[in-house]
Image (tube, rainbow, N blue to C red; front, side, top):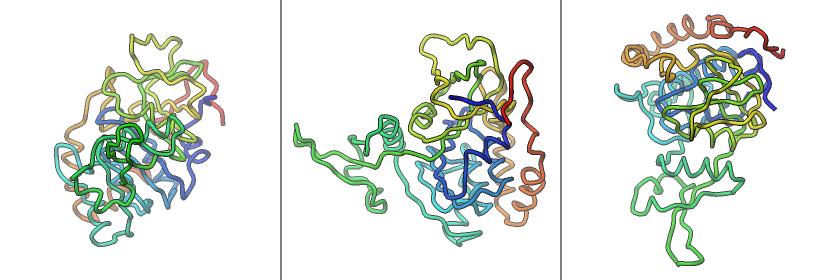
Length: 284
């Protein structure tokens, strides 16, 4: 049953050191605000999971909070590589991290398997590909009906799923529209979840085939206007392309990275995005 919480309270009560956490959103609705609150609270030893990890994973890794990353394609979209992730992999700065790399298809299937309560995902793929040579969690299985050799990967069942969505109603039902990645599957696969939203409304006014997460699938909802910035939220704000471009230079230098993070994330108010909604009780 979803509870309405302040962002800092949701993070402190739901995410713990050592957890596996999926911060999901496919180019759209990336949950930056929650990742920044994790950094402020110094929650470490995390296994982070994400299709297309981008800036928030560069920041989490660069701050030394990540021990393992399960992912498919890592990069600063439209700009280049993730410099803090590369420094951690090549130079163990600020610490070494373990990588488990998959394809997009494998990640999507693994989330769906987790959401369905299955132990593994089976699919066509990886046959002849090089990823299975460096990832022992990519195995093959023989179909008992056709004899076809198929790929198998473990289901993804995060301790916590974190997503940003457009809005929630006062009962705690959540609306996601626009480019939808695996946010729904990640929440359904996870033990606990945090959903930040742009606003609380009386009626979601969902369009046909819109993605709605029922209130009983969500642990906590936080009102976080701009919580996906610098990515975008359809109907609310666009993608901040200049931020992504500027990040490449910030992340290229360790000292500049640390100074930027201290000034813009660590020292920032924990309530910079949060607000109370009139008529809505915020649970403390």
